[in-house]
Length: 349
Image (cartoon, rainbow, N blue to C red; front, side):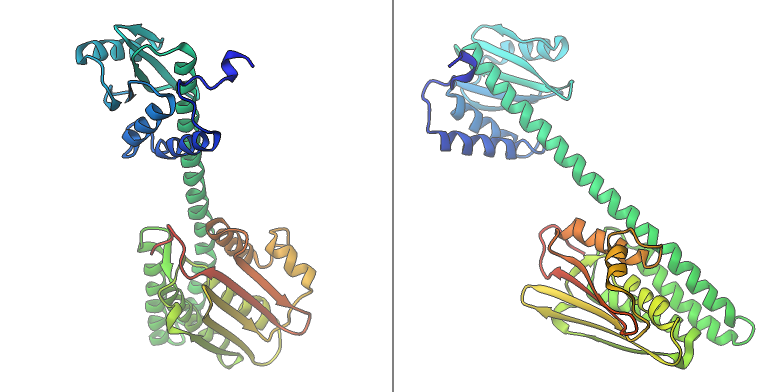
């Protein structure tokens, strides 16, 4: 076994303990060298590598110490030199090494005592790997949030166009009705555009659906029948914005409008164990199951893009086990089921 492959610390704990401590250190450094858990990470590193003292410094030179610190003046001077020269320095029983994350200086590691070079290298490598993982996870979270905002924004223009078309049709013939519909539209846009954050609650989604249905009933008249029912226990469940209205819009535009005679759209929400299940069902023209699968996969003919949008957002937030399922057949209508957990860490309105 080569020197670099051996465990360099003096009292070698069992492998399980080493891995467990290393994982905790990595978790504690997710927020960087100046994060709230950086001091705990320093404690874990000192115990793991069995050194007299260990410090973690960010670019400002602020140190998180564990164990015996070195002389203040000596440490400050060495740390300042390391952060400016970006080269390891050892002097007066203190060793400081720069920490580069993705080729960019992030801070320094300070070790107190007679520390072998192999220990210094492995301690620095562990810190750098933890910082790199933290940055990657932060970047992934930011990318996911940006994608959610972009996907949400895709849907607003469709509704705006449809709603304004409906209102315009009544401006001359029924101005009072056009005014009421404009107020409905204002309520909807206030809900979808004025709120901050990415999430709302089921109650607000149903309220937005009722506004949308009021606009659609104005256009279709007696051709459209609606039944809306939601159980009280799911009203407070947090969900991403605008995941329900596109399902209702799809049911009307692609289910009810193409058929002759009166059509029925049913929107139900209920609890099933730890899940919230919302279904949107129409008795319209339906489609081939293969076509529905293609639409959810985002590879359809352009029809039902809102379904793919909603499904993708739900799976991004909750994971592959959640999202939409579609039950349909030609001439048999369509039932879209939305399933999300009733409680999800980090998903708050």
